[in-house]
Image (cartoon, rainbow, N blue to C red; front, side, top):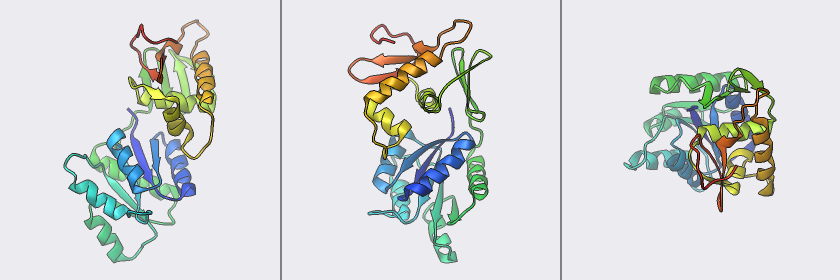
Amino acid sequence: MQTTILIVDDEAPIREMIKHVLDLKGYYCLEAEDAHEAHKLIVDHNPDLILLDWMLPQMSGIELLRRLKRDQNTEVPPVIMLTAKSAEENKIHGLSAGADDYVTKPFSPRELIARVSAVLRRSGKSIHDAKLVVDRLSLDAISHRVYIDDETISIGPTEYKLLQFFMTHQERAYTRAQLLDQVWGGNVYIEERTVDVHIRRLRKALQSRSGYDCGYLIQTVRGTGYRFSAKYDMSSSA
């Protein structure tokens, strides 16, 4: 599976900038704008690393980190604090609370990637799968290419993001609303039927010129939405 990084920051432009930088390096990103949303994503998705802003609404990043450390039922991944607080005592405060590293704003993309790589390397999670493979279908997260066997498949950017999400979250049924939130983002208003349009495009794209069809991997779950699975299910339809 790809290395998953949770970006927690209440400023959408900062989240988008960080996500863009990490996407280019092949990481899979989740986003949260506050501590409550971050906690839910940590429990549901168990990310490999958290980029955590200090100044969050309602509950600070430091307080969230302390609560996570106290919760024996929650596995806390490595945490890099992101903050404009550059004083030495603030860095000591953040590290003492359990952060693995501390990056002050503004920071360069190169510095962020270097810090992320170093923390993941220390945690033993530095190697993320550049290529995801299911049956004869493969997705290369570094080159952003999709293959059936050795044939490159032509695929649109939204269909690529949808496929990448499915391949990193197999065997679970997702509603259209959940797919909109995970693939398009919670801040974008799009009708749920748009998901059906892109699913049809994705299934059509997953056909090789030699005739092999990988569209079966995307299964319709009646009454729910869609699931990605290599297991044939009589109760689902393509």
